[in-house]
Length: 394
Ligand code: SF4
Image (cartoon, rainbow, N blue to C red):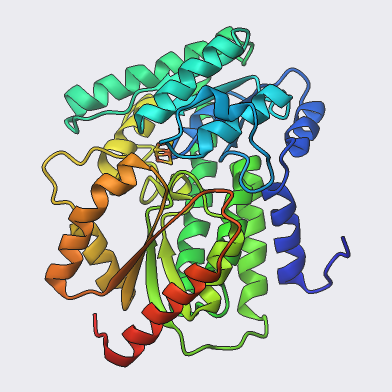
């Protein structure tokens, strides 16, 4: 690969290499530089990365094999009518691609992830398999207490596997690092909304996803450098339609699909790709409790983003999406869910109803992580953006 001399593209090239690092070479390098330290993978959507870092380990976000892995064995483990991500996960795990991981976390977002966690446990009994139960009650004294206990169970599991003993100051420092990253992400998202031609959705996606392979501190430095480079980069404005992309919070579409949407006339000014990095909306309040682990639990309770993968108690489905569209000045919504993704597809009719009520145009499509044909998507998104330009007014 020829290294780009343009600062923006040079950073993105490095980020893309991490996104495409199927055999986790970067994780192996980190472990070689930190002898004895653990690397803990986590499936989408959200896992407590700050907690893992606070235990001296590297959290590694994993999103399946994407379009780079031929699934042969993985298909034998799952029925045909579920999404693709568990198949490529098993395929890669059996091939040894994920050997650098000392364990994997499976957040409770759907039955597929639950089953995958069980399979991981059977296939790799020597590795940590941590099923992370998420709260479905938002009273700090009930759901908050439960979730804090769940996070402390994770602390104990990491200690058992060789992580250094829990240390409050180290945990606080890791949370502070995570908050710095969060602040950089807010700036990046603001730039996308204000000047989408300076930071395309596909570029922001790569930059954010790459952070799943590094510490929060390293990622923040990378994001800050990218933001600086973006502000002075020569970039051409397009007469595109401003859209919000919804439904891709777990299995990720190929990057080329995001680029296809952009080329068909859409400025994707907000999306839920990489929702995990933004799940806690704002900093984790370190004054919320004496124990920093309790602070993480409370932040998830109080600042968790609305998503199909998160229980929302008696809040109204679709309202946060309508608010997002209004606040960001979007003109429409593109629903892009992974095929057979229960959480996304069960939520979608309620979200569509909320948009319809508000007169906000939308279009819907489905993908798999290994989708290779984009012509139909290009035509559909092109027709949508043209129709919004001609007739739509959100
Ligand atoms: S893509 Fe959807 S159904 Fe599949 S594992 Fe993710 S959340 Fe579950």
